[in-house]
Length: 450
Image (cartoon, rainbow, N blue to C red):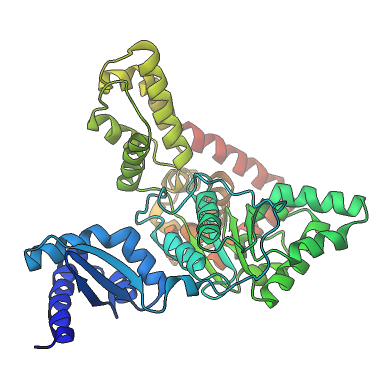
């Protein structure tokens, strides 16, 4: 058996073992397909991936699993490395021959990297899309639009994309901007008659990372300027990444042409944290800090993950509050559930009393209109049920931070356009009939008091 065949035999066995462990066809076909051993040198094995993106994902997410599986099958102690068959350095297609000016400021936070981002089912799709964009800016998904409610990691991914690109290709001009800063920049440019100078400055940017574009809604000059810059960068092969608290199609205050540009690439949603991801975030935070205040019981982390997983900021804030309390009142002691109860129990009880969700709204509306909650999700279109259904959708949209898609799913699998139409009908009803205003206000009070 020649060397190539020997490598192939080993690697096919490893892949067979990995399939049993990973059990995710999408991951296997996206990242493991086309991999192979290309060299064995002493205790080192080099595996090639078909592209830089796959190599990055395998190195960052699966290297330990690959190495353990390889060593278990070969009864050896190999060190494994994954490389891009086409050379990872060549994957950065946006190139500059001129060095980046010392005065150019990217506004990137070095703490926000792919390594410090905890990946789970709620954000895996966004993470993969962000990584693909960073590995091959201007080519994979352009623009990339990441959406989801506040505090779930959208800004972290923006900075991670920028930091990765700057590390791999320092000559590339990467610019992070919050929409508030962009608006201020445009207003000042118009005031100083310098809007063309501003456009010329953005023309030099290779990768634009724009955060919270939902705040563009009422700024006409800003929207016009962004539309021009957007077209300029996209048409010259530059990368744009945008974030928002909602899907592009839900940005109703924006013109169709701008929404169309935002939707022309890939839109991915970061969803609410699930328990396991919240737990892993807490573990990572503790590992990254030198906590000398005694041991933190695992039960404490489980409690925080279960009660503060609505967003990352609240989760980290809860951990910081707990550490402050422990350091201040119990220095040197273990942090156990007694400390947690002293710190959080009253707040958790209050939060639980005031929690509003879609089911709570559906229950209140069905009671108010003397129908069953199941009828709100049914296909029935009698007048009283239709009105109740529309008002329930309207209340969900206005009282909750959930997407139109999610609302539609909860009302019998209806699509987002149906939800939009329902909300618009209720808005017209409120303008034309004071009785509906009273009904909506009474329902809001009922929902909050349940």
